[in-house]
Length: 324
Image (cartoon, rainbow, N blue to C red; front, side, top):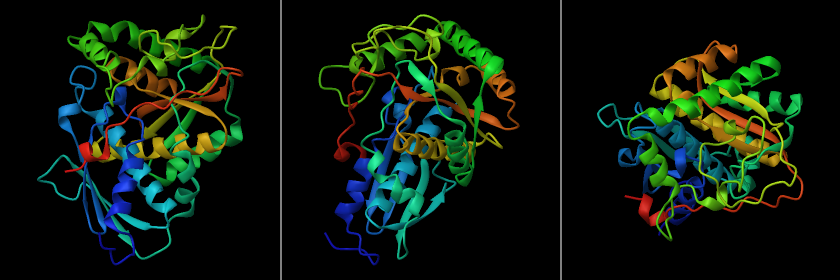
């Protein structure tokens, strides 16, 4: 395959797409499709993979696709490719979320520095032994702001109220028609499935204390720390000034940058969306966080428990299955 005017061939672009698919997504649904042409990559939402009961307005899908968009830029920056991004380039095609063009200029250094973290980042649903230090949270918030979002750490009594909102969502959401069927479908995949949440990515047993805010999935097989106890991770809320499709896409971009940067600093992370999937608990999260904007995702950040071992890599669909 020939090189583009910027010196990046199509094979390299497709490899960047492969790395972009390592981005986290709601229930690991990977709700994206990609179209690669010389010098250009298009990101499209795959509406067939939207969780209709869990995510009725498609917010989780857009946040997930935004995370993949940022992963794509980081992957390209890692091989020295500069890029420009046009979001929602065609009003007549709502599924066409962004076009990334490779240009003749140096990549953003912050993006290039995160390249090595793409294959290292995991969603660690186990309890953490400690939280994120304030200086790290400030650094992550600065990254989020460069991508059009904000990151707010919730502490003290507000953290307790946030955990209560998460617990209430875990109690209330199963009453939504179709929700439990979706959860079952994406956590009990067929043998060899390259999507969904495998049992190896979920702890063997939940800890005591504030357990339900850690994850929503059935008990898995991931080794757990011996001494169970309350999670000590820092709970952060990613917010945006508005709440339209662009805000949600950009929130996902910010989430990805935060996750990769936290991984680079040696901290575990886990995205949490359940409390934002019900209007009542989303409103509570907004006011609990003291945020002026709209909450788009929660992220738990902390020091991983010792002697637990790494979280295994979760599967992804083959690149050929996400290209069109």
